[in-house]
Image (cartoon, rainbow, N blue to C red):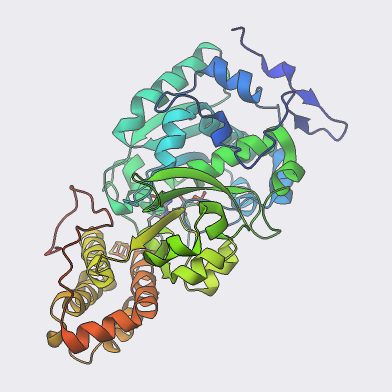
Length: 446
Ligand SMILES: Cc1cc2nc3c(=O)[nH]c(=O)nc-3n(C[C@H](O)[C@H](O)[C@H](O)COP(=O)(O)O)c2cc1C
Ligand code: SF4
């Protein structure tokens, strides 16, 4: 197969560029490029499928990115264009771009699928970001399992002299916090891997790796940007809502025998996206949206809710990293919540008060509610007060994520908690449902 050169992209009158290859017509946009399971798409196949990355010059792509309304898919759903602009304007020193594929959320698998199977789409997005913000260096921050695919992809691109910047791989530690942006910087500079830092008043967008402005962007966000560069903002907005445009990769747990990564249209009710009937819904006792940094929603709310970040926030949740876990009715929800909170407590970096003291107290209270309810002083009503003690007080948002997870669980499983307090813990023989990594630092997690 003959490689296409960058010059085969067409240039429109306003100076922007478009791909010569037609855009994918349906809701499968990123996943329309996935071939055989597990196999990484070669550079030739990638160019054949998507066409070359159009030659956007300097910051010209930023206006298109703003028009697209693309938001970050790593957790916070922050507007991508706004972030690229602030890095581009951050100062005299050449910025650094990080493609963040750390995927610390144990239930998430979508970044792994992307980086292992579509490495060139992610690299295109990272190179586009580097060109747009004036960076000469890209770091690809991934787990060891993705290193062979990314190494091959970088070598393929080097042989064709495709990229105007250096691209290097940094291995992400296997920790929940590995993907938090200041922790990513710590790992890259070899300070304290996977440990968030106190950055004072200067965010890493201004002062990150080596004191340079640093753009940390989730790999899915970068892959979407690479498609917007080819097919334009208007095409991107044909799906989704004005505030949450485009599609999202979801890792769905509990719908099929094995967790699956699917690409969903934003704005469509979750029940419709997952093909869940009212009958199916009876066997689901609640939905965790956004992973362990997200929040619980009742089954009825979740299935009817249009899948947008705005709607999720109204229920005290977030699409976050795109995990959708459907909790089977035979599992004790409170024991699941307790296991996860104990895990999250163990994953704190142990350098500020809320993590050192607050999360331990919260984990203990959830453990009592789940397994020893008679020991819980003040009943379930005492737990939101403990959440209030950790919220907004850490140097990073880890404690806030834990508090959201707990608060949302108490709302959705209020009746279940009342039953525990009245009759004692469940005696469910069902095995644990939500995944906890084997490498987790265990502090009494069951
Ligand atoms: C506790 C915590 C863990 C995080 N873990 C990840 C992660 O594993 N992967 C990721 O892309 N972003 C993660 N983030 C978000 C990053 O800090 C950062 O905002 C994100 O990578 C930026 O990319 P985006 O704007 O494309 O979402 C985490 C944030 C927090 C507070
Ligand atoms: S809040 Fe916790 S995880 Fe975040 S920096 Fe402080 S100790 Fe570390």
